[in-house]
Image (cartoon, rainbow, N blue to C red):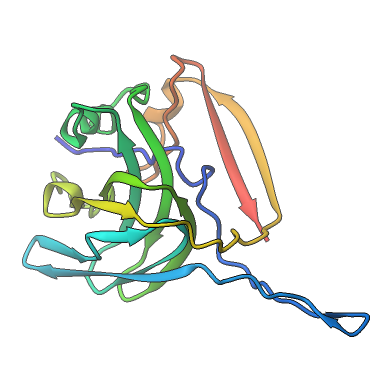
Length: 213
């Protein structure tokens, strides 16, 4: 059966595109430049159909720039979530594999991540992570019939966020968010590979798109 994954409503969550920050002089007094977000590079590679995401098992608390380097031959992404005690990603996956709209479990909490990144490309995002245990996964899959998403081929794992907050601020990014309602039948009419955001509500479903500049 062809899996039609639907991206979580993560990109409208704490994930923000990296923006430039700077300081200046005011009346001869030099402004204090805040610390920059820590930079963490995540490299995706492939061996046959299996994929590997090379990222640290531990990150420091605070604003973090995640840079995804996609060295595979297919699209990849990196989504970060927290799970309430006793729950696993395996319990969540059926909600994004079903042909019908499905609610996001209340025990899963999205923290953003790097969106779909084309083969050979690099993409980055800044997320704000507090101390705790997180899970991550990649929800992309090739266009071929019967192809499995990356999280079934090695594209999942966990990480710990520890230490004191870095004090680095999140970038300031202007955004415009547009929300509309769509019916459940709209999902079936979408081409393979398009992934509207599921929601906790049954049909009709509220879908939000976010444009940044």
